[in-house]
Image 1 (cartoon, rainbow, N blue to C red):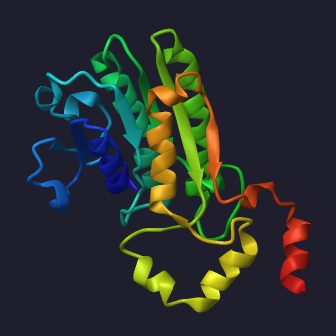
Image 2 (spheres, one colour):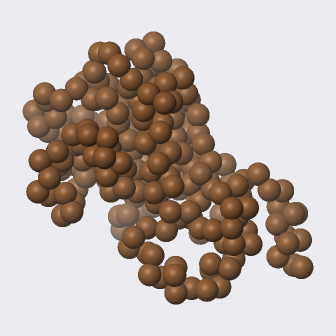
Length: 231
């Protein structure tokens, strides 16, 4: 998701700074992309980020698309990567935002912020719900500075890395055609497009919102879905 968001920002002519453990090979030679090495599993203070490397570029848009992928305790790991690191970066970067023009923060949350699913641990659910609450808080607290914050809540989606797998799974594709009102699986680009919209002048009066990007699954009463699958 983060890679596709970077591509959307580049398409609009922005210079993009990526904070992650490792640089993306695809953009290593792109002069508009620079990388700052940050381990979000350990980040507890903004002083741990290379602030000098971030200087000189006023921020217009900030997007979060991280997920805990470590091998440690999933509860602590999810909270650290999903909530603590997000708070540290927002509060550390907020004074680096441009003083005028459209400015916004967007976060990739999940449908599991609002619903429960056995495929994810309790910490994942708690963190995504907390991320939505954080979105509302910073929308309120930063609104006076003209900075908006919103979140997107995607359903399971196809990435380039998983495309071949899903294309070979006829049963899974049939399941999503029956489950999703739009009758297909989502794509990483579907979610990145919403982030791109929220981080633009087109969304200048939208803040504090957590938007489902799920092809309509969230609007269907579960009994209706159950009856469709039992038919």
